[in-house]
Length: 288
Image (cartoon, rainbow, N blue to C red; front, side):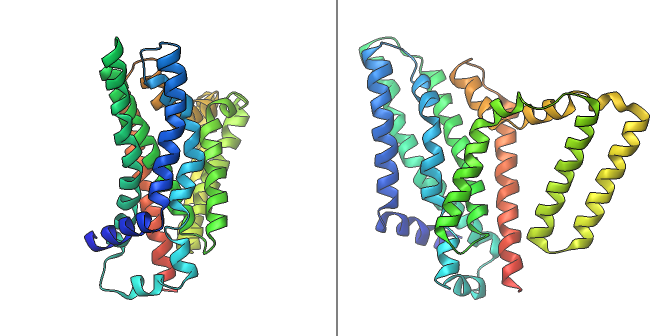
């Protein structure tokens, strides 16, 4: 894994992507920092991070689009897949290289609260927890982008699909407000979610038995529960969607000064899930 990690990290800075990403994020943040903290006098750097978190929709696809799509297009993935290197080492080596590149601008962000403190009152604990949560949220986005990159050989398609997925994640909180709250809509929503998960499992594994059993078991469970205790489906879809709102964890720290431990666990869980899905996607191609 160390060899893959060094190779990927070196590639990011030889191709200038690492420098461009860092310069883009720091320059953009600097503009907001000057406007909010220096000119307007806000003591919290977390406000700046809250205002610029949408730039991840642009920055992360730039970082992840080449992770597997480029290897697949150039056929260099065949060397990796036939090399005496474990699949886990390949995926984790690439993932940790991307998170290291993303850590560089986040490390520079740590200077901004100290600048605020040098000229007035600063809230370092909140600001540094915000930077940590911002970084972890970016790591979730990287895991999503890496998975989407593993599904195609086109960097453009990988970038566009990642932008689309991250845009949905960014707008998730607003989209949830349009969700219906009735019992029937809750049942239909759960069936749709089960079907979506089964579809992803089939797409990754090409095993229709596993996907079919999951689909049938999920639908059967919904039908049984609807007869036994149907009221549990009221507001269930909205409550479930709210729990999956990734941005809320960061907002709780940046705006409400609340460190959401459960949210951090959710971030780590999502990272593990998408890294696992990436492994399964590569594994399928390895034996095809």
